[in-house]
Image (cartoon, rainbow, N blue to C red):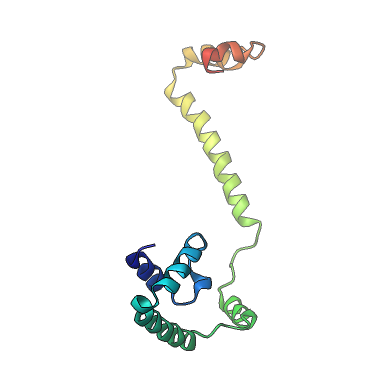
Length: 135
């Protein structure tokens, strides 16, 4: 462990070794013991900073009251639960109907018999043979 890496860990995770990365913790603690004079000032400064942060950031004990207040103020949906699925179903039916209707408009009437014959024949065929090498 280099002094530079130790100082990076110290700045990023604080002076408490419990917060240091697990894979580097033992090596960093060994470095701190062996290089006590070199890193003493940095460790002391980080301990002061950790103490200040601990005082400023108090853990929230119970958030259930806050959660209830936030949920109580949220706007309620104005439509019943069945309306959204019904709208999706109506859009799907309308799209299918328009799709079939547009083919009747764009295809000449003489070709309609051939189109229906092509569309509804071939169910008895094996689709794996039709896919070829993609199957």
